[in-house]
Amino acid sequence: MERINNPIARLFVYLGLTLFAVYSIIPFVWTALQSFKNFKDANSRTPKFIFEPTWDNYAELWLRSIPENGAMISYFIIAILLVLVCLLLFVEYIPVKSSYIYWFCAASFALLLWGIPQYVDVNKFYDYFINTVIVTVGTVVISISVGCLAGYSLSRYTGMAAVVVLISALAFRALPRLAFILPYYWIATALDLLDTRLLVIIVLVAVNQPFTIWMLRSFFMDIPKDLEESAMVDGANRLVAFWKVIIPIMWPGIISTALFSLLLSYNEFLLVRLLTVNNWTLPVAMSPYLGGEDPRHLMIAAAASVSATVPIVVVILLFQKHLVKGLAAGAVKG
Amino acid sequence: MKRSTFFAFAAPSIILMVLLMVVPLLISGWLSTQFLTFQTMKDGPQFVGTEHYVTILSDPRFWQSFRFTAAYTFITVPVRFFIGFVIALMLDQLTKTTRGVYLSIFLLPFIVVPVVGTLMFKQLFEPQGPIYYMLRQYFSYKLLYNEFIVKTLIIVHGVWYVTPYVIVTYFAGLQTLPKQLMEAASIDGATFMQKIRHIVVPHLSSLTVLIALISLMDSYRVFDSVFVLTERMNPIYKADTVMTYTFQTAVTLQRLGKSNAMALLTVVGIMIVLIPNLIMSYREQIEER
Image (cartoon, rainbow over all chains, first blue to last red; front, side):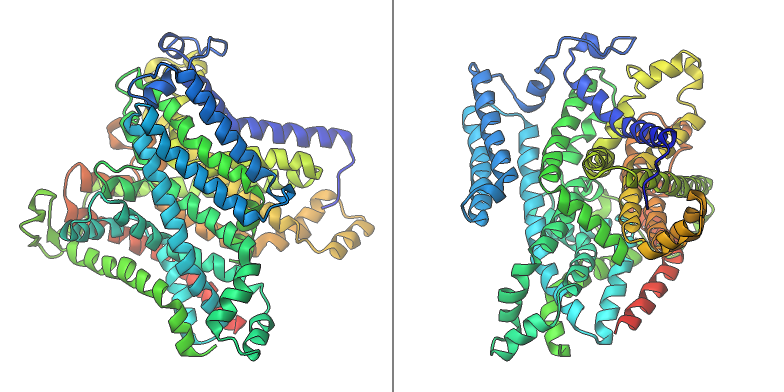
């Protein structure tokens, strides 16, 4: 649409957008404020916006006991994380092959996660965090590699079988989780898989699969057929052509899909809640704070909410381009 | 591509979906005719036939939850679309950098974990929260946390966390508006509202149908947010949706067979909404061949 030049109308546009921005962000601001308050400030009768901030709630959430040189350790961890985020942000400007930087960041992050409990007495919430990282990474890797093969073949095969697969996938995407969950529980008890990460990963991969193949297929449709056909004329078989020719140019689409797969598995509450007993992930780790009988829970719940949100916001900020593109592609193409 | 190659490539995905979606659905259908609790799981289920379906369909609480789900769907979906459309039009007026800042803020409720987002939303309405404080100035304690307020809260939250999705898709749709048509309209002296009425709305109509169907299905099976919001303040369970009622039947009452029957009834309900969508995409796929 062309630009409106009437100044009053423009003022109205900015006003509307700002009001909506306030509506979107106010729960986050308030929760973040609550998480830095002490008991008295958090429970005051009139809501307090100015107070003395404290890290106690986070310490109580993450740590069993506070180490002596706690400040130094936390500065050290924050410094490492900042360096990693900066590396990822400016990956295009560093004269090293970008895949090396991604691997380096992933390896150092894993090392950090493994190393922290050796020096600090961490609480259960840390275990939930580790669980979440393992479950989401596992789910994304498996669902993307299985989905890529399926999405590619669905975009190239023109027979009836492909239509049937696509339409039934669309139907599965719409079904409620509760229709599957008790059979899963029943089978998992029989196989003695209940409360394992493996079960959660398999189930999440299956649940995300319909969405993943639709999205990947729509990205594969954009790649001209001539590319792999010319490679196949040169003597490569289809698998080699797919791996050497198609995948390298598919990276942006794969990253977009991986981001959505990550969001879906990170957000899953119902399945994980019913299929695990102790090996919770972060959304399920919120459930002790849902009841709210204990007024102390209010700040801990706030701290837990912020802790579960910050990692995903950082990931999204790093890949925001891909998220918006994926949202647009998913909807415009169907 | 040959048929055999297609199946070779798609096999892992198809096997996964058959094993973990088709088979469980069939088991679920079988379990819905059985009496089963978590305790009797080891001994095996008892056959009760269609008894569960009869009790559910004559259960006033089920119909109450169904009515609330329907109300939730038919209120939230149009509101989301209206707000989403207006905000997308407004966003379109901005320059690229300011737009990015606003878009990141708008996306926050959408990307945050639904359970966590709801928990944050709820913090505002806790007795210590600012909105509760403001409401408290005008209403007595008894008027807060009644059925109407809790239901309104659920609906406002439903609008809050899905609108970003509508904004982004509409915004992407606006970028594909045919330029010549817009210019021709300007030359002919069409006003802003006329352009929206005669060019923008028809251009976005197919997109609207598509996301409306997705939105409808997602609202029908809403669970996470209602579960969190009603955990503490649910006056005589009047704010249950079909899914939270099913969850309670399974986990609190331990009637696993009955909850399976209920979930399958939801599947039937969703299918009724879904079938036009399926036929539409089927035609689309056939045309693409």
